Length: 91
Image (cartoon, rainbow, N blue to C red; front, side, top):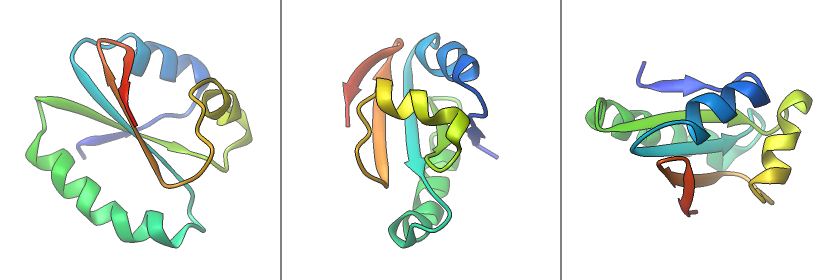
C-alpha cells in the first residue's frame, strides 16, 4: 500500500517531520463518514504518486496519537496536512 499508518508520536516525528520532500498526512477516524468517503480517492492518489510523495494516516481517535493533533493544530476531521522537508506547507 502507498499509505503508511502512523502508530506513535515518535514515528510521526521520524517519518513525517524527518522526511525529505513532500509528505501528506490524512487525519481521520473510522466513525467519520466523510473520511470513509474520501479514503478511496486518497488511496488512488497515493498509488498514482508513489515514489514522488509520501502519504501517511493518523487515526484521530487513537489517544496515544492525540499529541500529534494538538501539535499540528488539527481541530477537525477529515484533515489533510501537507509537509515539505518536515515543515508545514499547507492544510
